[in-house]
Image 1: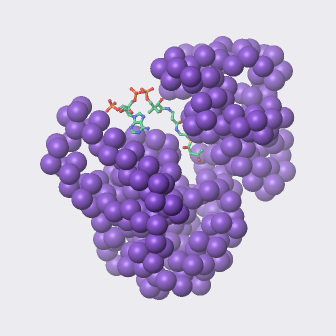
Image 2: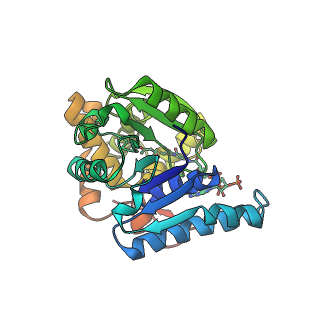
Length: 293
Ligand code: CAA
């Protein structure tokens, strides 16, 4: 079955990015959020990104118009009932994802493929909320979605090989490089990235270096585009905290355990860029300053 219409559930940072690349690749795309203001916020962000691409001459104004024309927003879950593929990018919590897919399973035809953008939950456990685990995969994108080249395509022991191949082809149609991953918690990237990010916090806690020096070290010493503490603010400290807890629960290894400082920052509402405060203060977004603890 050829994918023509794509549904994206969740129109936050990840969902909006996925909807944008889907529409840009020529798929009719419908993005669903729970409230009209969230739909509007997601679509406005996409429009801003497209305007920037036109300004830079990456795409023409006509192409931008066509992409926007392929994209609709909705709060009505039933509007996804004629999608060939639905990609979920909602909050990283298992009960919410299971409930969503149980609903989608009832309203979508049996042929619709379901995908979760979860970064750490077990795909098998989400798929088990449906009667179609054979048509269920993980499609794990990276932030910012329009820029990052990778999609991890995750198969469970139930995923039908033909569905898996179709999802690899879909990732390529989005212009992404796909990698194959088994349904192991954190897949490939987060299995390696999360312990590194948590170790950067531990290094800070133990006074190995300052926030700026830890970041400069990895940027200039290893050629990373962002230092680990800047990256944590970018990804969101709450998101990293959820992921770490899920991975620790699965593997019971210290390298996945959330450091006390991370927990305290999340409890204080310091979630990184999105709340204006994390390891850096973003009052002046162009010139963030390191926080003092
Ligand atoms: N949306 C769309 N485009 C964006 C963007 C956004 N949010 N942010 C930056 N860009 C574009 C810019 O327009 C620019 O495009 P051109 O080259 O065509 O001009 C390009 O990205 C580079 O941006 P900048 O020059 O402004 O800044 P930069 O060189 O510092 O790059 C970055 C920004 C791409 C974010 C870079 O710093 C980077 O790669 N950082 C690391 C990001 C990363 O590691 N992401 C993965 C996080 S882990 C994850 O997402 C998964 C998980 O499960 C937790």
